[in-house]
Image (cartoon, rainbow, N blue to C red; front, side, top):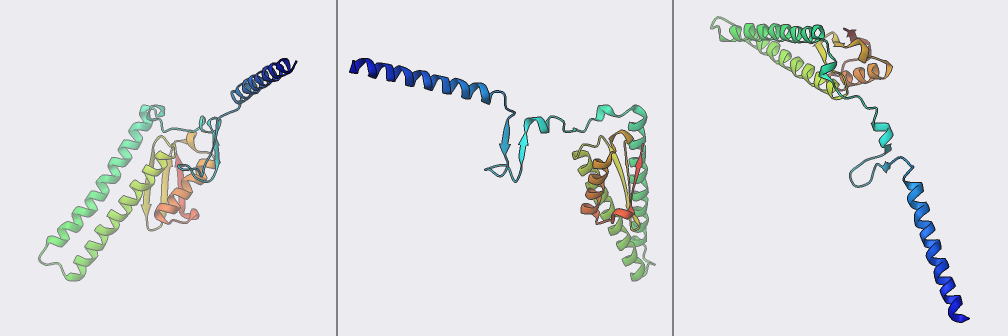
Length: 181
């Protein structure tokens, strides 16, 4: 009788363990995969695979030929204008008849153009990384104008765009103009 009780207890424990493993497997397979950020590689939030599946990726294919041409021409024209300013300032610096004041003004102008060009490029790169297919940024002392695709602009992307310009170029929100194509 003792032997029978031991075998019955062992069989019951094996069945209970098997049931627990099966229930754990079947219930865990139906839950979305979540990871806790803050562990070794990730920081400060919880993310699931469902949340990331809707993320927007920059898609150059989503631009029409007309839009591609617009952005290319505008960037080329902006680059040409900036090159002319730098060339003019370089010529002033090379002239023997230029005063020290004119030379320092020309150097300041070149430095300003380079500073604005670098910030424009940083803003455009950051916006493309945030999901805009293409964008165009014009930056000057009075503010910033950013051109993006109309279909990509909503309340959330508008705020993200303004925050990017603010962080890179320190332009107030009121001085940021958004133009859609």
